[in-house]
Image 1 (tube, rainbow, N blue to C red):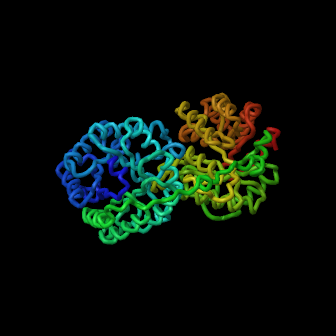
Image 2 (cartoon, rainbow, N blue to C red; image 1 turned 30 degrees about the vertical axis):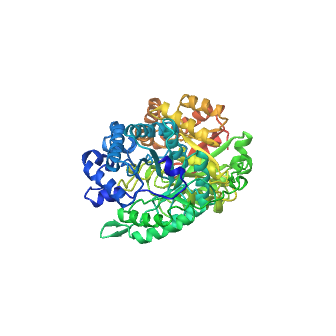
Image 3 (cartoon, helix red, strand yellow; image 1 turned 90 degrees about the horizontal axis):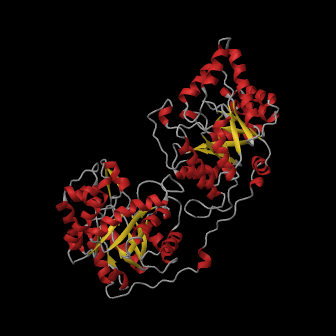
Length: 613
């Protein structure tokens, strides 16, 4: 494989393995990587068919043979075995007729900063696959179908820690020519070149036409050898089956154009067959003996990204100014209505503005119950009541593209303050069958917002002027796993959170480790305060709301008060809230009061009696 890279000529990869397995009777509900062991003759024949068609490099049947993906089939412990067997089978199948490259695909999970898996953990997962492939005798590696540059770097590090065999690094782009993270082809080319890959390129996701456009952009940004393995077009649903419609002749025509643009390694991905590879081979044969087109890279001065320093905190919003100056912040939380009556949001917000409250926080479908969206409600509050809003924005139910769109729209509408949370799963609400989407969690979203504040999206592409969000994160000081919550809080602070809001506090001692951690990062903390209106509410929060710790003595106080009637219970709830505020006031920079059923009068009363309003 090293010889093919060094000779300066055009060479041919194989095509799709999964498509061939499916077409030859392997159902989609089985582990395709395990088929190497359960049906070795079938995999062996597919390798041979591709070599007969003209492939000079074949990839092992190991695209998903990493411990993360294999764990879904109970096969994680057999990671090295499966990779070793696949490499040996491929070598046996092709003999000396072709080189064998170890195929490595993404883990199928998000890694930091947009997911909980660290880069070191990801590298360790890839290393197990690399070790198995090396034991099986591969001559190089193909890292393919990656969307995240950070993840492909982990895979590359795993290879380089064990061997200096050649590495082909291939990303995947969508119909817009960018990755799912928004990274454009030129940036991909520069990043993969800087990484040190021997060959860089694209595969999968799109057909030859879109890939050609993207490859042309990559060709202008690097002098590294390029590879291209497109799908056989974008699949179409025909009689409940996904059919790839691009013919071998069509794919071959685009292969000819890619060669003219300097591509050195051509093959196929999803939907391609030995017939497609044979057609590509014929085109490559026409160019035999002619070195690939020479390309000139873009000067480095043009390559740098436009990330900038964020706007200073005090200049982003009134809330940001108070936080930056160390002044006390008063916030009241309102749950938007179940319907669409704007007055149900605007009227309580006006009362809070008149009372001198700094910001109104609009909750985003708490407990997975359907309500007016927090972005719309926050916009109404700012326009109708003249008070700054904090958008309570959840990750639940949204993929990363939706989050990006929402946040860019929020910035355009003048919303400057966001409180990012992961969100409650749909099972907690009245629609348990609703689709659950947790593309990234609150830690990942914190990183995303900080990127927007520097003028770049997750793929490193500029968004023009940077956003000016003042970003808060939530702390569940009453979490059952306190150590895990502290660890997650540390990640949020490291990601760049501007402030933190606790869950309702009933025992200030619960805050101590979180306050110490926040102090080390110089991050202001705003304490959540909830005046219980009834015993029933107190019992509900004590027994059914995760992340909130209600001491038994508080519930008992509410029980004794309720014995004297509902009004007495409400009064006791106010007294408890005032006691917490008095104890927490020297320790925090503000208070965030809940207003059950949008009854802001109780919240305002607590602030007045605490001497805060």
